[in-house]
Length: 450
Image (cartoon, rainbow, N blue to C red; front, top):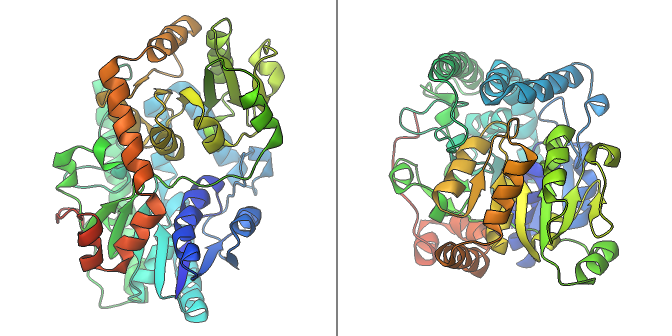
């Protein structure tokens, strides 16, 4: 049996998708990953075959820098970074304006390349990133059955009256002005309509008999896989999803890191892990305020600085570990708290490790994800642009002394996520409805598809 995994050329997308493929590899089956050249080393570390497939202009092998991107993408990235400094709504508005070119890049060319790829690889099963819309067009247009993986918060697939790009929930300390939100929703509705027209035009070219979509952002594959814990998802929203499986978390196995292992073993002081991910580590001002908040506390800090210079962080205590990149899963395994932007990998990996979160959401689905963590009592969220070092310190101190019921809830969730891994759940889900029902009930609903 051959599994084909289709991923954008971004480490943050490829890592969880490739991790899903390990369940097939462990069963002795062939795994082929179609992605771009920037993440070739990641594919090779997994031991998988790689087919070249470019799903967008940009790429990110681990830490993204605007100057490393092709012409046009570099300015777009700088514009995004600047928008995050203006606040949540300006960031979401900037992303909405760029959405068509970002998510439906050269749709017919990519779709035909995907169809050629399928003919060449002849996979028995296909797993594709939900945000790879051009690739999904190729699969849909050729009638290729496939599993659609939502790697972000489940709201990345709209249901009911939701509009893509407009957060379905907000954390308590991030409540934008009602007028600004109204304007954002209208903008997102306009983007949805244009995007859907483009989707329908490309799909009609690929398959003239295909029914037109009413909302391309609500389209999904034959099986929907959500890389997110079901326990954090509102039951009323779950009821609106099409046939699906919650994977919980796709936690990868990391290679040994002698420096990190030695640092973790050095003493017993509590470890706080800090990372703003591969994109948003450019926000050196946020990382500097977090560092100031943590200095003086009786903790050791492991900080993934990304594209932020050490000099921008202020004085670094001798007990801290600061590197451009750190093995997140390894450190979370011994951490007592994580400070994060709220990206899906950070959230799900922290939950699997039983680590509470202080979230500083900056874009896309991070706001809804932070609201979910907050509502479950498994962390707190602050405005990354407004929180002072004193407010950050107070939140850290509160999370370092959690209520017993919160600790018990997090321990139960961690046990559930590690008892049945995301890769195993994915493989069972693709085996067929009868096998899935025996292993883990699938949700049912019909509101998501047009």
